Length: 85
Image (cartoon, rainbow, N blue to C red):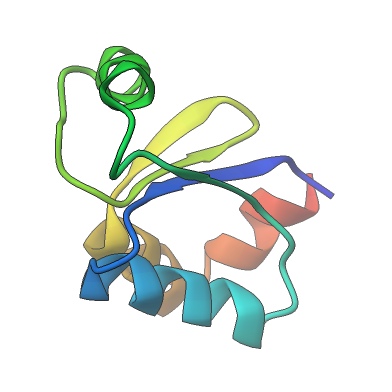
């Protein structure tokens, strides 16, 4: 199983939607809340090619993007293959 990382904030509806999708598919992930820690958010921004919005999602250290990108992978039937590696 691939290593899934998701940077979130507590109040972000897109973060909740992305986590709900992963939970529905029984895909485990490591969540990092960047809402109250500027240093964590800055580290996320560096990893996410200067993107500051949440969620930012990584599969095996490869940047996937945000919630829309995660759902696009699911819609294209590519998510399962990515997380199975």
